[in-house]
Length: 167
Picture (tube, rainbow, N blue to C red):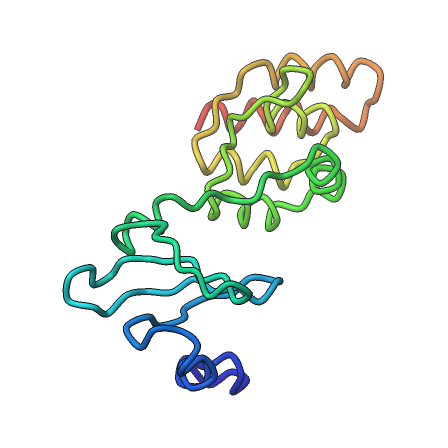
């Protein structure tokens, strides 16, 4: 790639020459200076290893690159982070979460789904995005209707959910 030289593959290979086995190519690192490497040896080509830079120990973590990718999981989103995303009506942030594997049907500590929470808070952008993703509406309409009794500005959310449910 054309990024900073210290992040380029050739630079990493050169930097660790003599420290890491020559059949091991560093492909990622962690904040402590350890590396994830891929094997180019004939007998385990594509195997993924963790290299501890302090002990020079290599530990096989996956037999193939594909298995390694499948084993990765997205960073969990805290309740506070999700509350902030909902409060900002940030559909783009929700889209980014979904692209990393976030389950839009996940329930919070109160048993509410993301669309229900967006309906309660009156957040149309998130509701529209979730509708495009085929969300299960659960009790979102009833929750929006309940809020509209007390907060007239929520009537537009009731109308929006009804429209989207018909589509």
